[in-house]
Image (tube, rainbow, N blue to C red; front, side):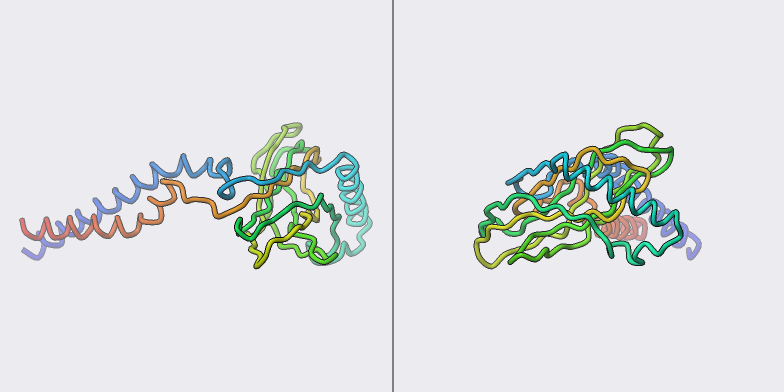
Length: 221
């Protein structure tokens, strides 16, 4: 009897694990396209970085490369030295909280490997840039000469009252990438969870329920 009970429990665990794998297998292909989903309830503004600003980014990156090649300290911290761009002011009613700044970067990979860039983004408030770090915008496993598109977002922020502010993007560095285009999107409201994300959030509980159901079913046999 003890052997039979343990054997049934082991089978139950296997069934629970299989259920978890099935859930993950269904969700994974859809989660891989999550970067194409909205970053909020609605997009309220789009700012294309002008050509002259892109030229300044290229010169800034070239200068940083020359400093590194000369063996001089590049500033230490990753964001100690940045090239800033400030867009036009836009209306931000408090009813649209929170607001998310999204950076979409398009460029060409210089060599095989990973390509990416580092940024900070935020708002110009009372003449001062209030920015947050954007998680590294990166594409892995690209080929030399390949056109790459990637996106990243700063943490969403809320305002107590209606504001009229200008978005700020601060470029820190690029790796294996010639930047040809930067698009700044302003999204209003919280992004709704997709069905896949909701399933994944409940996956641990669902796995536990399946395990318990199988456990009691085999115990009663």
